[in-house]
Structures are given as C-alpha cells and as structure tokens.
Length: 152
Image 1 (tube, rainbow, N blue to C red):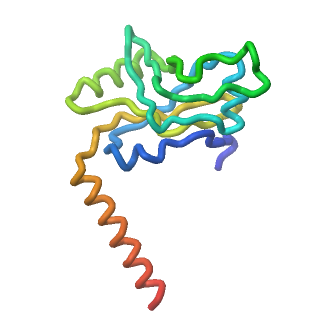
Image 2 (image 1 turned 90 degrees about the vertical axis):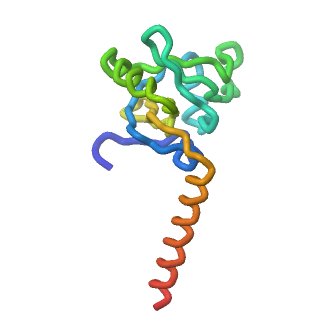
C-alpha cells in the first residue's frame, strides 16, 4: 500500500466469474445520512448491483446498504438509486463503451480512499455458460499443477 489507504468495504466476487472485465474506473458515490457509518460496519451488498447512465449522470441501482442501527429517522431506503460522481468526459467515454452490444456497467468493489467512499466501476461483457465452465476447468488444472509441483 502507498500513503493512500484503501480499506475495502464490499466486493462483488461474482462479477469476475460472470463477466469479462474490459476496463475499470474509480468513481465517488453520493451518500446520505448514516449510510457511511453503515458502510464502515461492512453492511453493504453489491453482488446484484449495476449502473446506468441517465441524462448524462451515472446511477448505481440495486446496491443494498443496511440501515444504521442507531440512525432512526436519518436512515434512508436501503435499495435507493445512488448517484456516482464522475467527470463529464468519463461519463461520455463510459456511454460510448456500453453502447457496444452486450456491455454493461457493474460495480466491482466499494472502498475508502482518504476517508471518502469510492466505487470501482467496470465496463464488462457477460460470459456465456461455456466460458464459465472453461474458467473453472482452467482454475482447477492450475491448482492441480501447483499441488503436484509442491509435492515433488
């Protein structure tokens, strides 16, 4: 790690299995009320989340941040749309990338960078079933090779 500390809050482990990752970008995220406190406690789920571009703005949908226990009236809807903070040129580039057939925006992880919550957003293409099987078979064969080398 460098001087900038990056504490991971949530990861989308399913993403690399279900998608081919073409490129990634770091985006800030607009949060309300007690959502940051809840995130710091690890109460986030981005497994089913995805991002959309609407009217020149990027929103992440289906990201669940559990309500903070001590938050009472300051808590917001756990599944609300959250705006991602990107420069116009970055949004235009993302829009250009996802207009290609089969590409989508998915969050890979949420983390803290210098006290600010950031999201690693990926331009990804969905894998077919045979691609997933091929990846599992390759991983399995690599594991067997490593084990054989370790035993010899």
